[in-house]
Length: 537
Ligand code: CA
Ligand code: FE
Picture 1 (cartoon, rainbow, N blue to C red):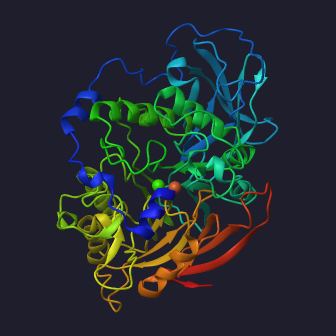
Picture 2 (cartoon, rainbow, N blue to C red):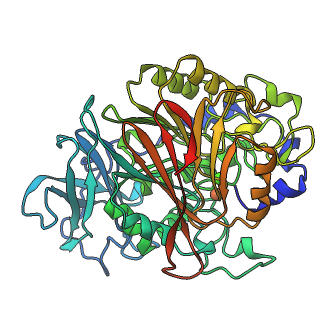
Picture 3 (tube, rainbow, N blue to C red):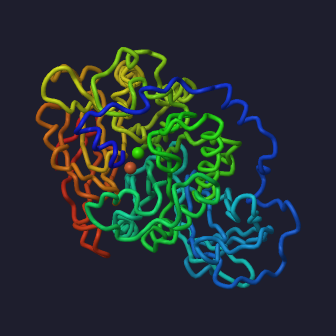
């Protein structure tokens, strides 16, 4: 959610999207089938052309840091991207990059090593899908090229399948806007003892320099480079600018990340092939392809997620022994257009259309089948927009933000009814997008305060992205009795899971416009296993 949507939330202006029709599946299919995409093996060890043997760089080419992600019991993805300056500076030729995985930080006990190709077609990014590692184990990794060494990263594999796991700790984060503040929350994440970081979208914002400050409430603490992201070069440079941040680099280097995008990695409030601003479908899909490729190039995703045109397989499942299973959802790529626009208002009849979908039918089927098959104590839906109903007006009828699940109530109710009817163990929905922290009871009937709580929703605040209407949002609790907590402080949510309980600490940065400001726990909630709904700890 961005500033424009907050303005909608309080002023209820009609959305420009309301005048648009449904997206073109045929146009999407045409672009998806375009030939000439990069080979799936690039960046994974097979040279496309003869890599440069002994390259020299004007500066250390690892200026964007290192990362790891998507831990499995036997492996993890390692990432880096060669860029001597954050905005590039590479010759358009492939380079051989050596990688090393060790048990210790000094690399005395190297357990695996190999060579991956950093290809110019993928922005000289490197994605190594390391396998053959031990479960539930800490490893250290680094990259080497032309006599230059990367920073050392640390990662941890997932526990063995079926293993009893005492504890899992992770940070839930979303909505980091370069111009709105310093990434102090990421620095605080890096200082924790975590198994992983879960980022549920708006990792960056596509806006041009300073746009969100005209007219200005206050000055940006730092400015985006360039205009609004539209081309591959634009998106690459924006990712690189964000990755130049030392706090973000530290959080990536410390822990494996699991990432899922929301809208701003591409464009505010887009839905599948439909842009916010009525761009022609073909042009928007070309833009989406650029955004998705840049996202792949900068995230520790498996090469199996390499985009094909404007399509990227992002939804996936990660399991941590018998303790927790995460279904990581993609709420943007397969959406039907917001049935009643993307503003705030009374639901139009089209909202009740059972074909209106946030996930698309394939992902929804995959989600429900996966939940049925899960043996985990905690079943997590890691996703983007708020699932709880958010009535914004004290009178009747209900008026809701239509870009979130409130705009797709039939799809929401199918998922919640499935959780209830199948008795899915301890479902917890994790959410970002709304730039504020919430704890919600999820129900199949939000109109009935006495109806059963089906699942618990934890919403993390934004790392920095602006929430100018924070006090007003808090007032909504008064007529949304399923909301148990609201707080508008920027930050993230620390989660600790055991077989008996899930603890959530809402960490708040006292001032994101001051570098290194203190971070404190604003509130703590606990979900007892077997009893949906969180209570204040
Ligand atoms: Ca968003
Ligand atoms: Fe956001």
